[in-house]
Length: 127
Image (cartoon, rainbow, N blue to C red; front, side, top):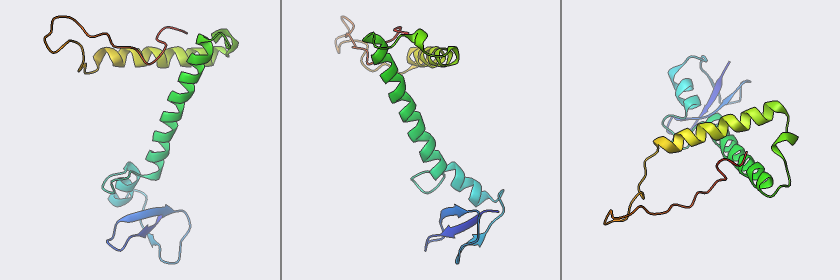
């Protein structure tokens, strides 16, 4: 099913369902097709991977927006459907756990006499 268009150096530029004028057919399990879908080799990532990255970034923006609305008492977490509340709590918990295992470059002063106060960029337990 995948028809590929290649660059002049032989790299896959795009995949198509239908045959294009200069498209080459490759089976779906071809290593080159799989590498393209994973984003290997082209430096930019596959379109699906780029889109997933944009989605993840947008989810973070929406999560921060919801936190800001809750912090300002414009929105109550209970205004959201139960499933949405659970997803927000799950993400917040997961992000919190990631922070606990992240590399902390600024935990202490250079002389290590006292910890540096790090201002959080999210609303932690506002939900």
